[in-house]
Amino acid sequence: MRTKIVLIFVISIFIPTALLAYFGLGAVRSEKSIVEKNMRAKYRMMADIVASEIKEALERVPPAFKENKKAMELVLLKEASIFRGEALIFDSEGKQLGSGSKKEISDSVFRKPLKDIPYTVAVYERYPLPVLKKLEERKKLLSLYMALIGFSAFFILGASFFTIWALSREWRLAELKSEFVADFSHELRRPLTSIRMFSEMLKDGRVPDEEKKGRYYGIITGESERLAHLANNILDFSRIERGRKIYDFKHGDITVVVRETVERFKAYLVEKTRPVILNMERDIPGLKMDAHSISEALLNLLTNAAKYSPADKEITINLAGSGKNVVIEVMDRGIGIPPKEKKRIFNKFYRTSQKKVTETEGTGLGLALVRYIIQAHRGYVKVESEQGKGSKFSLVIPV
Image (cartoon, rainbow, N blue to C red; front, side, top):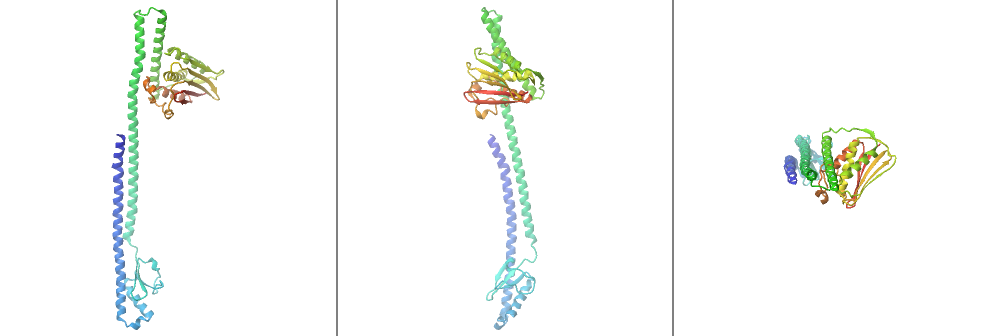
């Protein structure tokens, strides 16, 4: 469909422009050619008249007269003078006869050698030809018009391509939003179903075993936490999109935020046996931050690590100081990210084309929120990944 639209624009803009340029310049060239042809005929006629007059004049004089070079040249000059300087006579050596203004035979517009005598009639344009000059000016002006039309066509085509690109982007965004709504609905359904099922079982007294009750309460708590996290993501993204997100920056201890976030993550982790390893350096400097936002960013990375890695593979969190920065690393041993999609994973609603990703519930907002939050802290997110071996996300925050 998009290819057809592009072809229609090209055909409707460039082809008429090319035809206009071709026929416009062709008309000027044709008109100039006709004028030049008529002028050549005029020059030839002038030379023929002079040659004819000279022939007739020489036929009227006795043969002995022709042997007198000076006398004969006077006859030649007299007959050529009928065109008042437009026709000149040159001898076999290329010298002009007469005492008038000297001209070069090579500058003549037409030359005609005389029969039986070693002289040539050369015709000159006495006055500049205004018609040819005007035609040449018209040709230049028309060329300028064609260039302007071509530029306009190029500009229109460029604007059209930009419009198509913008529309395509909006169409894709609309598709992504539609997919987001569907994925969001699915992601809501599972925890709500679990909460409803286990709460009804506990309410109806169908769980006499205290150990099972504790496990079910834990599931309800975990799923509630999952819903709260999902709601927070949506609300944060909405505020960021509208420019209404307000960060509460306060000087705090990042080690406390990381430790509490990891414990919170473990609390609602479905695979309770999954190893979650936290490594923190000593003497990590405090920094000015919005603790809640940093916690949400880290929780998004941890949630993704759990989603896209096998249940028995560990998730490692490292907290370290690096120069004037604090670095939080989240490493998993999951499916990894294709190299060509690394730059796109932080786009809103974007999810990679891998089968594991498309089969897993998600909104495509998590990493976009991570990037927004860390950028608001004047930091950046770095990702290293090898497909099939895992990924490492690093949150680099200046102290």
